[in-house]
Length: 222
Length: 271
Figure 1 (cartoon, helix red, strand yellow):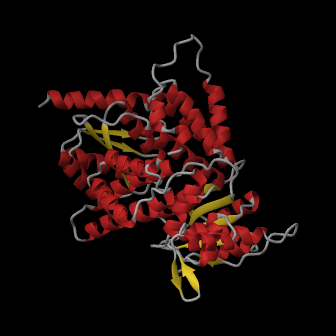
Figure 2 (cartoon, helix red, strand yellow; figure 1 turned 60 degrees about the vertical axis):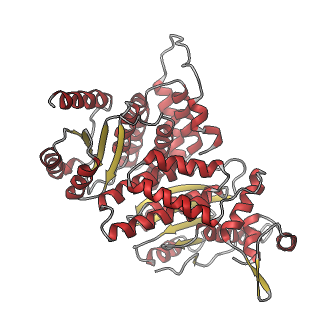
Figure 3 (cartoon, chains in turn yellow, brown; figure 1 turned 180 degrees about the vertical axis):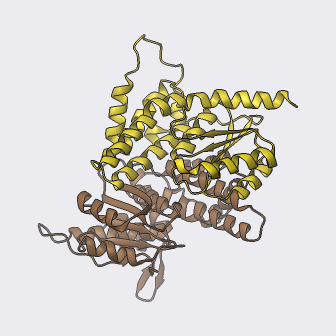
């Protein structure tokens, strides 16, 4: 890890910054972040994440307020042709690595932390939605494993060995409805775990609450 | 690698590298009239020179041990243990290129072998690949200071393996290249257009399954203005950085003139 963005240094940042009463200017941060992604400035993109992390902004908020809108904006520009597909790929790669860096700054999950399995269904090449879900759950003290690009049967086999308390199926393609439903059904029936399904446009902020609610419901039914 | 390549990696004159070999500062084996050097040891010396750290490179047997531990952590899906192993290597001064070449890539090969005999599930290999992708993302820090040049790393259409290309990015950034990482499945035409816009010093194509014909397509479209390196499975990242340096040096050699047209080259037999 870059010494300038050492996760240990971030963790040693100490007390949260005092609340000054000034609202965070998310529009300005989104502009900065988008500009860094489009120009391929990975250092600049990580700096935005680092500032938010040092200010103890939850990762769910960083994903919802910064990452997702910036990428939607870039995706829209790509669709209308003002940005090339290659530029979009560079931007997405930078966003993935910046998010992975932010996640590396989180404290490790406790030994008794509840387990979650985050799945990207086969046929969906978009990693970021599942990466965001994984990061948000880790920020909520879940021990998370992420899996993608494999058949439903192999996901079920992994779930049987890993024994998660919860599965989250995260997908970005709208035409994956049937495979997602099949996967969710098999996990619920064959492994007996609650399954959350998150598709395009689903808010991340509710994910932690729903995850804990499903986990508590599962515990109380024992 | 030979002494000339080692000098290119180290950023010194050939005679300087020869003096280091004669004085024992640079490990080498005399082979016939010349010397043969281990690319990983050369990469470590290059790293030490950049960061002024004492010689603390992991020896090959140490890396085998760490590789075994990493393979076990990956098989168990333990990303915390995997991250700690890699972080410990970084603190010890092991350069990211050596971490990829000697630890992560062999660990993944072990996992594949275990999957073939059925002791690891295919899904668990997929989990391990996700963990490695995050580890490589942490290793792929943008370079500090003046970059050596601009490189584009991509895997063409049809290529689904992301990790080799990401390892190439890690190695090039560790060698102070600015890198635009395009990932997998990019059509050759899009890649060529991007290369014409960005005017990189180098394009690296990472291939494990896609035909090498795409490299020729890109070379045709860019009219040979951009040197292209083509990778293949099992090849050393240290060799990649050495080849990249050579290409960069040869392009800049004619003072005040146009960049030398570099032929399509590879740090492996393509196809």
